Image (cartoon, rainbow, N blue to C red; front, side, top):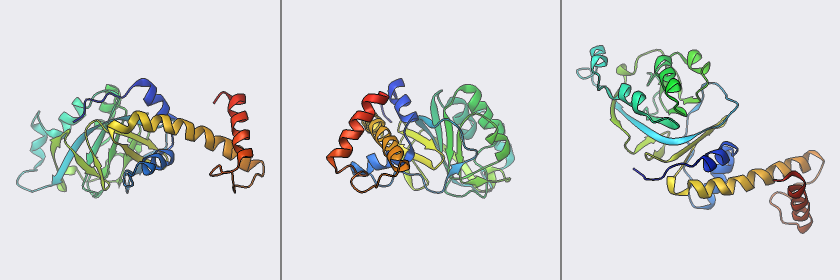
Length: 241
């Protein structure tokens, strides 16, 4: 658990940062395994997903514990997680990297969208992928699946440290998702990473314009020539970035 609260300023900066930029900045700080493996967007969204992690852990299902009747229990962890994930947070599920059974479906994800959650990430499967993809809420998954979670997974623990796609995710970590996938930023680094990414995105936009104009990347990316630094400084002054 963390007492960190994601500020609007940091959220806005990260909404303009690609997962590639986040990965580069984390790498510079010695963190090399923060990209959730094996997940992809259900449907690409125009806006990046940013929010603090609220977690749900699944374990392998056991037949005597997971008949359909368990959903009658008002304290079923899957349902409780959907109802208690705070607005602006991302529900991150440890689906055991097994997409052959669903960890949620379109009704549950719709409920999260109505409640104002910022997104959902699971390294397991999702039912009704087409319906989920039509929602505004960003959702990332291991793949589509028709079987209910009960055939493979038992939802057990809420808001505890989990593994998702081979990445450790702690409650309160900051989650950033785009068309490439999902990065996990340790909460204590979120503000620093956001600030660094803001400058990095600005520089890469400048570099892209230069490359499109025919400039060689040697001495430009990375910027090792003083003349290119001067051009970048002039570009920033002109664009206000």
